[in-house]
Image 1: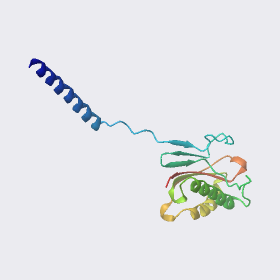
Image 2 (image 1 turned 90 degrees about the horizontal axis):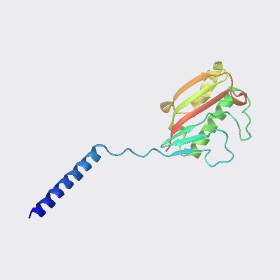
Image 3 (image 1 turned 180 degrees about the horizontal axis):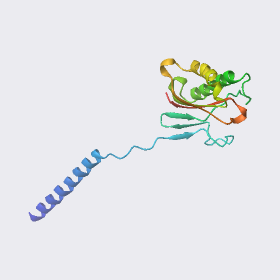
Image 4 (image 1 turned 30 degrees about the vertical axis):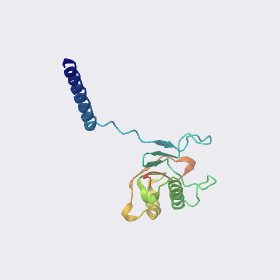
Length: 159
């Protein structure tokens, strides 16, 4: 009888410990795993020294884009055509990777000359719906790659 009482006592202690541990786990569940990160340069032997984009969870972060055509030349005609080509390049990258211009949440615009902000802005606004304008910062630089007039980087959600 004593042996059975001892076993019952041990069972009660083990059971109580298990219930307490389960309750602790419910109060403090383990943290979720970190989101997957995908770099456009991963496994790409032709990649430059930066990723064209990086996907993290449900976000895509685009590196700065210039107004270059498929041959790598800047669009001719100044800030307006360069801005249009830049945003076409951004749109194509987003759509190829599961997003769209409607999903853009933030843009950073870099201008070679801040006096061209108004002309850039006219073209920029044609790419976004007025009720879904992304947050934006703009600043002047002392120069851009390829002597470009504008460079734009964006962050967007994935569909």
